[in-house]
Image (cartoon, rainbow, N blue to C red; front, side):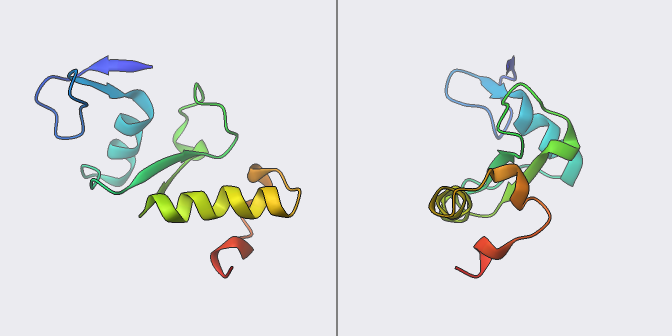
Length: 88
């Protein structure tokens, strides 16, 4: 879901911000840095429950998670609590 947020530091050029970004901002108590990515653990972009969201410092770390899951035939959600993909 997109929310109009003119002037918000994390808003897109069209002055809208994704709802999960706003939820993460509330969760961590600061604006997101340009390179940070909000991840939905259940891969349902409509589920913006704070418990379903994690913040990745870089797009590369987020891609590493999905690549690890795909390479090992795993569901991304199963990697929420065990994080072997961080070491690969």
